[in-house]
Image (cartoon, rainbow, N blue to C red; front, side):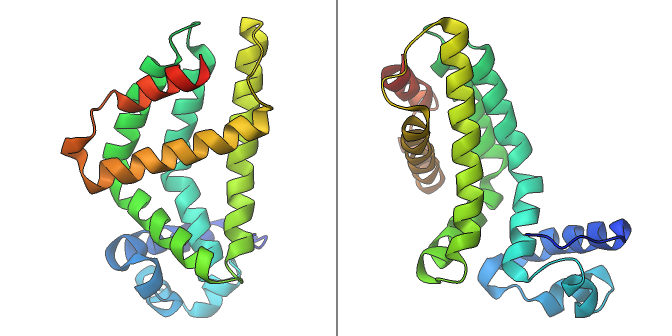
Length: 192
């Protein structure tokens, strides 16, 4: 979790520098020393605001990816009965195109967290928040439409995360082989 800092400009400068370094070098190759140099600061300035590289990466990830994910949540909330997949699928396709580099970095971090027991809790915490947000959206949608969910919302959220991540990997790896509307069609089959 990010440390509380009274120096918001320093924190913002470190996050901006980290975004550049992570995008250029990847999670594993990036160093806090390089990030500090990019920000024109010392590594002490980084550590005064963040617990380490993973903590900083997750903050950058939240700034780069989460606003785009929120757009998909909003599309799901607004979608009419029988029309969930079209709107969310369109937003998902835009998300993968616009956030390609950050999704690849997320996959790199995910693989590292799966191998490293010290990183796993940080990744698990972020993943838990995403799962809770998706479960909330599913619950809101079901209540609005007066519909029953096929499984508890948290279990459906887990399945949707798996579907979403799998589709993102497929589109990143071979975009020509994955029809742009496939994710939306899969959502309609899965949820409606």
